[in-house]
Length: 186
Length: 186
DNA sequence: TCACACATGTAACACGTTACATGATTTG
DNA sequence: CAAATCATGTAACGTGTTACATGTGTGA
Image (cartoon, rainbow over all chains, first blue to last red):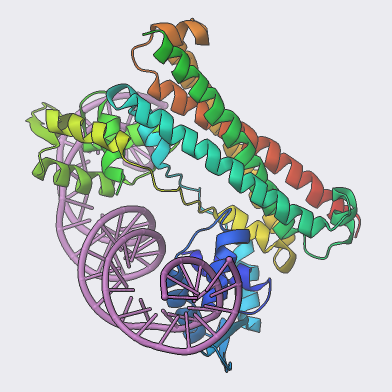
């Protein structure tokens, strides 16, 4: 039930339409929460009905009108109490690890290819996070940024994403090396 | 649609009843796939209907009878083709990171407590994985194990889990230090 | 005797995914 | 001129969560 809160948290970055939120989820929030546009539209409607966000229609020339949503005071309140509620233990679900678990009864070459693809993805994601980081830091170093910035949340979650991908890169590379060595011995 | 494959992969460890599978998911598979008992019962029934697993009733004295499931040849075949299909990109969903993202508008002390709880959980999980690892290695070192073992999948996924938790420990500790330093400066 | 482990399930609901539908404008 | 981007949505289906229901055996 926390897509709701991910949406509220994303709106802290500024008002947005469903479409814009979808973009935002693809970049700065994807790191720890993913959602399809459809989920976002559905969730925004519900949030509006319960008064946690307020939508207004912005008319646009040369483009379809859009509905832009803002956090309401009760939305901010909800976010606040959410941060204070106990978090339920996170449930992992990773397709690639299922394949790796089954590698001995499966198609080993295909699993190696999947690992290589994951490695490539992780490199790309890391590069994306590094760009975001440079944008945030804007020339300052980390210590300076942490002292001056009024919001540190987005920076800290971004660091989580970076480290996660760095570890991913190391791990996939190691596993590939192990599988390739074994494949060579047969 | 890959709970199905996680179940098939878990059955590679040996035949199991729904209840036993639930236990298995809590230990060796939880690392990369989680499921409630209800999901498993539902999935096993469907897998049986489609012939990927076969169930037989094992009568027990002093205990309720149980239905034990085995992979059928077509279940093995399905696992094999699954490993060869392209994996869809994994979707992350982490409550704690949502809280951290919103920390500046939320209850900072509560978020720090949640981080501390995660740190503690990560340490426990890591200790659990280390025990599993010792059981698998059974006195041998890694290189030896990898040469001798006929299944390396479970070991490699376990290593993934270990590293993930190690990184989690480092990251939560660092974030806590940063938040505490800031809290001190106010 | 009380809690926990064994063992299986139903029902209802919440959440997530996929496919489809529509249509204008900007960029290459 | 085609493709990508902006912009919003419906419908159907698949997956995951929560609460409840039931009953025996084992260990502290």
